[in-house]
Length: 113
Length: 114
Image 1 (cartoon, chains in turn yellow, red):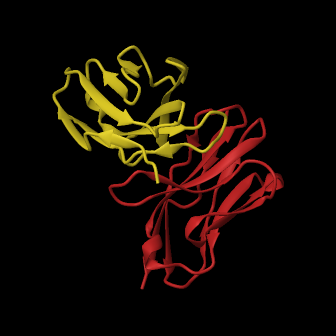
Image 2 (spheres, chains in turn purple, green; image 1 turned 60 degrees about the vertical axis):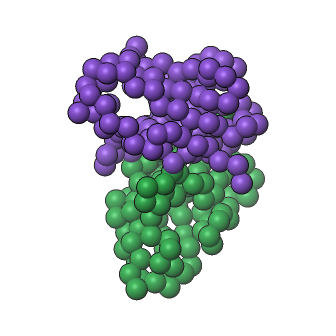
């Protein structure tokens, strides 16, 4: 069964550094999402992406975050200057056009030191 | 705005016993409802979904859930728990516009005792 893949599985970064999280969505999916889960808290929506542009974003997704689909397969989340509170599990998800549900990757655990 | 409340952050059942995980939602528009399961060190796997039509939906691994609009509930059940069901379970809601973001509950950790 096709799956969403995320790399790396664990990223450790110094505060203030830039980090890029990578995702390969399911190949025929057109909608892409990033969610995050701070330890012990609920999964929260960050941003959705369709047709090479952001379709929705949450209040969490401020100017330090950006998303990009640099080629036909990858979907990336960049955090420009990481803060301690960015430590979380970040999940990528993808979905077919006009059809729920979203399929999730295994996540990237981001640890900011 | 939409929200999800999952009653009980931790539920413990004996192997072979009924599993009942509670989910109540709030939505000003007709909702789509989902249950996801997360095994340790893994991502979120869809168990089942309610979009339209039949209010009793069946999912993988013997789970089912019933959409009750009058009670704004979408509780997850399984007649007989198995050790492999031990995991974190998340209820989520979205509205019926295309491909809208999911709003998750805080999750319920299910333990199965032998």
